[in-house]
Structure formats: structure tokens, C-alpha cells
Length: 389
Image 1 (cartoon, rainbow, N blue to C red):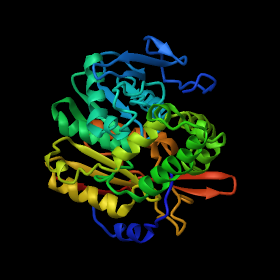
Image 2: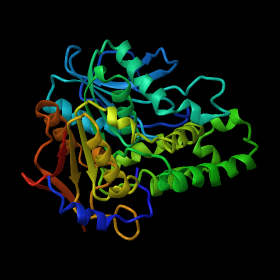
Image 3: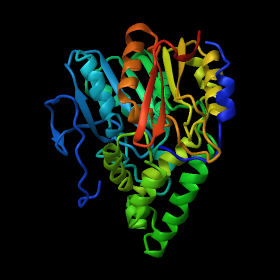
Image 4: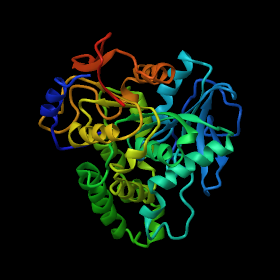
């Protein structure tokens, strides 16, 4: 997701010197690289009941006895967020058994069923609860150990899984990540305070949708018939991703329940893994782009690197993009927060390389906006990386 007001161009310059779904909504179905042969909904998604009380939707591709990879999306996204990268990974290595999950309250996966959830949404969307869903999914699918890749919120859930049960995790890949969601200005000011608890909540109040249960089950569209326009302009906007891909994501986001918008965002704003990451032992790859407009170089990447250096985990931090955020604080001229949307093949290649060698590729990928659209540039052998432990 893209949204911000703060520039990090100076920080990027410094780094360069550093070494080393509603019933009436029709949404195009995600298409995994091959048929999974399981019970499906929406043409391609599989379903499984988890012991955590969630009915989870997911995409699956690859042989049942293949090395397992689990892909976790970000706030208000779905498994579609990973679908193109999943295809690229499967095409490059058909031996892998790859899953992309719709997490609790997202996509076709059910909302948490606890009776206290509507009155206290945050309590039903904590990172340990998300992590327990992932572990329960692994149990149901008979997966003893997996490599897990997470984007944004999914990266914090990935951290939590590795911290809770390191014996179940082979490697982790954290895309557009941070060690600390606590007090993040974008999530706090430009998502939760406005529009979620601001104009959307006021609009629901005006329509008589005021009880905790009613708000929990409402959608942004219930608050604002033009919610899709806000989402497209401020949330799923990404000039470097495929336009049709973005068009498919936008309506899915607009029908994500308010309970998820409120609960998951509020829960993210309480995450602080600074101390917990000292106990991380799982080999870790971080991928970050220079115009990430949610998790900046400072304090997010500097904080993540500091935390990883205190851990017991070997790690690699790799940068995409060369140009820092402009004064607008919004992504304009280079790769940003949604790397797996923008350059799925390159992200897939880094994940596969890390799984096989412990290092991502040595290519340095950036982008420019030309008159006829975005142009991607790859500089072989010139990757900007920081390694440790």
C-alpha cells in the first residue's frame, strides 16, 4: 500500500555510502500457476477450517511433497497480492509447494468469530493470532516446516511465526517491513484516524450504523459509495504495478469489513519487536524499496537493521530503487512499498536464490517513469546489500 507525507531522500543518500466480499461484487478470480485439485471457491481459491476458528481461503500450486513456501499479504490485501510472484516462483521452480493465504478477515477468509470482537476489534487481530492461524494452517496441510515470505503487515506476522516456533520455519523473507509498527504516522493518521475512524465512521453514524456489531460487519462502501475512488487514489495506488492487477485489488479492498480495517490497523500500531528480535534465529532476507511511503529508511530500516544485528539470525538486507521519496512524501518516480506487485519476477528470483544459497540475487532493480509508462532497469552484479551475523 502507498500513502505517506515524509521524505527519506537524505537517508537513502546516506545508505548509498554504507558498505555491504459482498454478494453483489464480481471480482476477477486469482489464477494460480496450476490447479491445486482441492475444494475451491471463486473458481480458484481453496478452503480449510482451522482449529483457531477461522475458515481460511488460499491458493496452492506445486507438488504435495515439494518444499513448502507460504506467502502472507499486507493490511486489507488478499492472496491476490502474491499471485503474480507465486506464478513466477512456480515457473522458475515447479518443485516447490507454494501457498498464498487470505488471512483472517481478508479476502474470502472468515472474520474472527469471538463474541467480544465487535466491541474490541484490535483484540481479535493481534500478530500472535495471525501467526497462530499460519501455524494451524501448516498443521492442517501437514507442513512440518516452511519458508515464509510476508509483505508489510504480513512481514510482521512472519516475524511472529519465526519467534513463536522457529522449529517450524526454514527461512523468512520480509518485504516492506519494520521492527516497529507502534506509532507509525501513516497507519495512525492517514488510515485509522482518517478515513476509518473519521469520515467513514461519521458516515456510518449518519446512516444509523452505530452498534459495535453493525460497524464490525459494515464495509467502506457502506460508509461511502465512492469508497473505491478513495482506495484507488490513496491506498492501492501504484504507478509501477500492472494497471489491471491494481483494478482487481481495489474492489477487494473496498469490501474488506470495517472490523478488519479497525482491528488490524490498531493492532499493527502496537507492534514493537525491537527486543523480541534478539531471539530470532531464522535466516532472514529483507527487501526494501527506496520510495517505500509507509516504512521509511529512518526509522524503519535503521531500526530493523539494528534489531537484526542483536539477533542470532544470519541476515541480508537488500534495496530496490535508487531515488528516495520526494518532498510530497508519496511514491512518484521509483519502486515503493508494493515490491511484489511491481517487480514480481525479480522478487521471485530473490526469494528462490535466498532459499537455495542463503543470498538474494546480485541484481539491482530500479524504475523510472517514462512518457509511455514505467521502465524497469536491472544492474547485474550491483546489488546494494547489508549482511550480518
